[in-house]
Length: 76
Image (tube, rainbow, N blue to C red):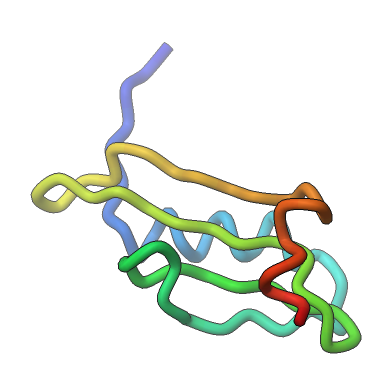
């Protein structure tokens, strides 16, 4: 297995591409827990929130919330 490192921009684009497979998905940059994150919407409803932790020029963690119960506050 090869250890590959990617920058925040590359990881954000990959995650957005994976989660926004339908053309009707809107992806915006917004504040997520004090960090810049991705918010994905379909038909005006938030379907996913993505946050990245970055150390230097590398992404060290990716948090993706898909659970509708946990996205309630985003859909008020």
